[in-house]
Amino acid sequence: MVAIIGGGFISNIHAQCYKNLGVNIEAIADISEEVRNNFASKFNCKAYESAEKMLEEISEKIEIVDICAPTFLHEEMIELAYKYNKHIICEKPLSIHLDKVDEIISKFKNSDKYLMTAQVIRFWPEYVKIKEWIDNGTLGNIKLVSAKRLAQHPKSKWFYDPSKSGGGVFELHIHDTDFLCYLFGDVKEVYANGSQDENKSWDFINSSIKFKNGVSAVSQGAFGITENYPFTANFKVIGDKGTAEFNLSAGVNLDSGSTNSLTLYRNGHEPIVENVGNRDAYEIELEYFINCVKNKTYPDIVNLDSIRKSIETTINLIRSLETGNVIKY
Image 1 (tube, rainbow, N blue to C red):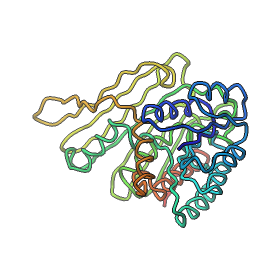
Image 2 (image 1 turned 60 degrees about the vertical axis):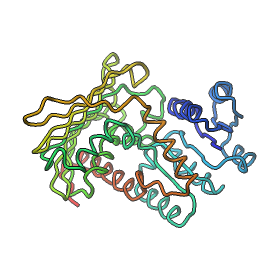
Image 3 (image 1 turned 180 degrees about the vertical axis):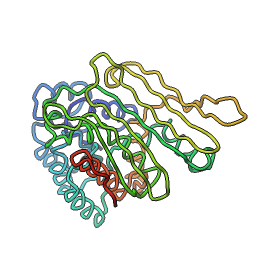
Image 4 (image 1 turned 90 degrees about the vertical axis):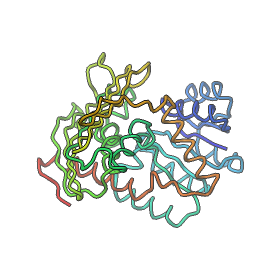
């Protein structure tokens, strides 16, 4: 049912999720012989050097193409899978170029096939619960929101080239930028400051986003923190009826055990540590897309217009970083 392009870290996570869900992985395409053969042996599938060759040979056996290739290849791989009339789930970001995003969206708005960006935070149980508390009024009127995400820099060379990866603002910070846009809608203005690495990549970012609904949010990202510092994420929403806070601390870039907690604070009540279960967010995300394909239901949780919004916001954060100006909409 599924073919995967790219055999790196995230594709192995996706493949294990498919295995857990009982979904057949037909093939992997990766230019590295060692990577694709190891992947094929691990997940009992065919291996191809070329994604084009893979789709030529097994197109009739697959419904979904899962693009886990490097960011700078996303546009090309989306075009290829579109050519073969497949449903596509593509790792974030869809592209680092807004004009290309618009071209891609235009094609799929006139297609009977679905394209979904893998913005996994929208499916992360603790973040989903925070959205529920916002939407149902548990937190009241939202006064302030803050987010933080700190991680080591991946080792692959292309990550260090901002023309290929978009830098930390696209590879890491976009997780929180996207979720903030998902929660609060249209942006009024953005401002960011931070510092670049030796490759002129914006990997250390403090950003501020004001939304048209009056909510203000701040977010911090570090894509290259000290090597023995744990992967860290925090998300806090302060309202006039309650405050929600999520904390996550894990091994280097989520490669070992983690500790996390989601707590709801309300005046006159004891704090509640919420139990949202321990189901893997990546598995929830992929199951959602598979069910959308099976049931012919558009994947609205990650609809393309909302993805455009988060990418546009990310690009404007870069503009602010480069100019020192507030970017108004």
